[in-house]
Image: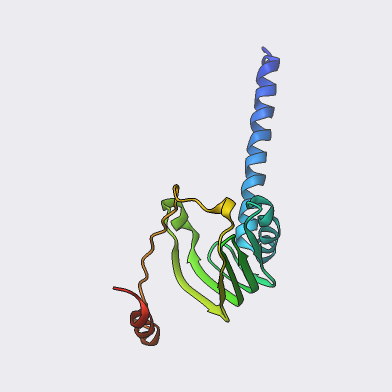
Length: 155
């Protein structure tokens, strides 16, 4: 009986180790987006990945980042805009991000405070503007929202 070469055993061990690492990483990502505690961790770590001109704060978090969540005491600060809300509820499907679309089924905001701020001279640019396009489709099951959106939404 012939023994296998030493490199083949190392190659198998390396493949097993990489498979285990991938499974652990996948489990961590699923925990991060699929549980309330994972969402809290993601929100606490998020400011470290944002530019220093962007600040996000959220108080109490409940739900799952992958589909439905709510935040109490939400604040977003940009160089030219500040948003603060007592509560934000978001019902969406994260799979739309893969197609560069945001599929939100319900967004509810309580006590929204919006402040526009004049941009500092170092942040003013006339070129490289970002244009964000979106479509708003009022729900036919909510006629009050449909009427109120149509009353102020430009045609």
